[in-house]
Amino acid sequence: MGRINTYILKQLLKMFGFFALVLVLIYWINRAVSLFDRLIADGQSALVFLEFTSLTLPWMIFAIAPIAGFAAVIYVVHRLATDRELVILHSAGLAASQIARPVWLFAIVLAALTLVLSTILVPISQAQLHQRQMEVAENLTARLLTEGKFLTPSDTVTFYLRNITAEGELDGVFLNDASNPGKNITYSAAKAFLVRSEDGPRLVLIDGVVQNLDLASEKLAVTRFNDFVINIGQLVSPGSTATKGSTHFTSLQLIAQLMTVSDMSQSARFDMLYTLHQRLAGPLLSIFLVMIGFVVMVTAGYSRFGLWRPILMAVMCLILVKFVEGLCLDYSRQRQDALWVLYLPALFGAVLSCGIIFKSDKFWISHKAPGI
Image 1 (spheres, helix red, strand yellow):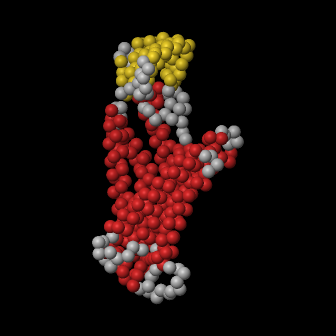
Image 2: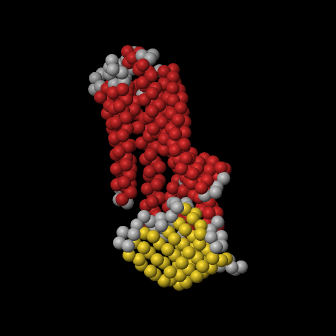
Image 3: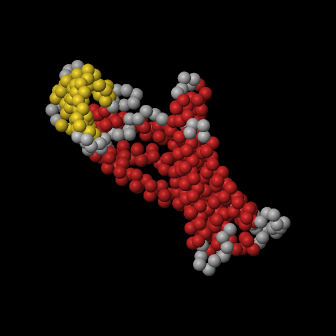
């Protein structure tokens, strides 16, 4: 059995590497096209594009690793069946639970990989990406400091500046924001200041007017102000100047904050706990996604039409488990006392895979497999 287990495990690891590489390349190309267009349009160099895409790789690997493991198991079992190796194993008296030993080991290795990614590598890369996005947003905002020209840093924002004084004051500022599909907001101010903050650059308007046009009702609301603050970085580069969230911290950092920070808000504490439990539930679920693919394939009987039916059934089981996962994620996000629901998809996968093996092996019937 040792040689058989090693043979199957090697095949699983080899095909996992192949499918992971293919899926990462497909996902990376789809994401890189839109990212390249946006960064180049903002005047960034190719090095910035490569840096941004490299920082998203840990998250991509984490997202596709369970699917790559599932595909590897389907392919390896299909090849074992096609080459009649699976028939030999069954003829030797090996039950599905015995053949599953190298698959269990492969699933545990996959879970350990996704656990390291979700708890350490992905948060570190996301934090670094967040920092670089803020720096790019500040660079884009600095380009707005051009006197006497109407600038369009994005498709929905128009900015005009009449003059910059020696003290750094901005005179005669005009800003039109059409990012909201239902509204068109125009800011005008006699003076303004561009200041930095932890959440990105801010534009402080002094002595001005806000004109809010509701496009649906065509009603215009005019409000005068003495001072007004706009998150200009968010307008210029949407989504890049948000405050750091729990996804930007490693699991050890989150645990340290939960234990040391006493004045934390209830919502912030729940967000951290939700992130921690999700990082544990995801790798645990990946074990049983792999096992579901294996047990459905290895317990399928012989058919002269091939193995397309068990492959289709395995894919349907995968979709079902992922659907249950989506429902549980939404439910636990809405209920702060229901974090345990995050582990139900893994439990469902465990019951499904173990139930199929139990039915196939008929443990209630006493039999003894010969040694190999």
